[in-house]
Amino acid sequence: MGWLLLLLLVWVGVWVLFFGVSGLYFLYMKHYSQKKWNLTIDAGYLPSVSILIPVYNEQQIIDLKLENLTKVVYPSDKMEIIVVNDASSDNTLKIVDQYIAEHQSQVRIRVFDSKEHLGKTGCLNQVLKTVQSEIVIISDADCFWPKDILQKSLSYLSDPSVGAITAREQLLNSGDTWVTRGEQVYNNTIQAIRIGESKLYATLFFQGGFAAYKRSLLSEFNHAADDSGTALDVIQANKRALLIPEISFFTISPTVWQDKFTVKIRRASHLQQLWIRCLNLLMQGKLLMPKRIAIPEIILHIFNPLLLIVLVILTVAVMVSYPFLALGILIAVGLVFGVKKTQTTAIELIQNNLILLIALTSFLTKHKFRFWKPVEGTRSALNKQMLQEKQLL
Image (tube, rainbow, N blue to C red):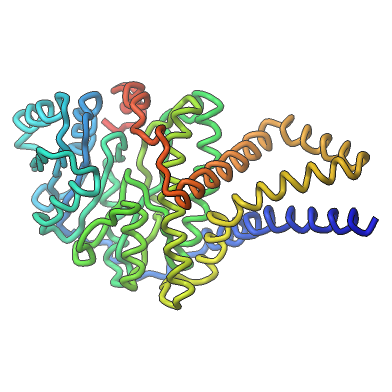
């Protein structure tokens, strides 16, 4: 009986730890997200800007991307667009050249054409050597901006303490399938946390749709984890990296789980590498991010996925040892998955921790899975009408 009681107590303790850290951290950051910015912002700040668009075989959407950026409101003499072509083997470069010829009076566009396939970060670092603008912005080809995004966002970089900013991700197809609906729930939750972290001090979670950096802080883009890795480099340079809630970029989410899994496993791998790096810096006393941000995030990204496995094993053991309690557990699980709202949240929680676990396993074993490849299905789903409905064209 003593062992059975100990099993029950340990099981309860793991439940509290697994859900308690994430729940309390969410509430804490949700509270901070409602606070005012502790920044000095110059609304008239108009720095020179270079927008870098990394592309590899983007013939399906590159014309939509360029048309979208042409609509962005900003002084034309202070903005340039650089298409960073990573040795595309399709008609991407031909389409870009044609667009430039037809719109050269509207916007400054130039091309960096790598004849060798260097990868996204490799290409960006090559073109960065040629950039003289005060602000460098990365924007992936499948992400689209509202026309006022620069007017609303760049003033935050006028504060001397701020080194980088990013925007909220909005899905163009959030209601298409249970996969996209789940991703929207995840986005709403995670972005509330990132806004809270930003208002407290800084966040690492940067995305390729809109990531703007002060050129003076960039020697290169981070090779290990591109956007978020570069945000950590900015923080380690004693500057803040912020998610600005007033600005958004729009993209399309995979509609089938296999494609979503491919995207998520890549992101999870990058984030885990970052938080492992943060853990090392923390142990050395060199991390410049507040511990009340770093420690919960390290727990959630590195230790919580392992706790999930422990929790499953202990739950099975408790159900075998306590038949009456097993009935209660099954009823509770049925209620959670029987209600649409809690069902989506529960699926996302379990799914994301399993993805983090797989990513952690790959990191520890130095094994790269075959399914780590670009997702093409989302490109073909984008169309002009979809973007026009959101006034992005």
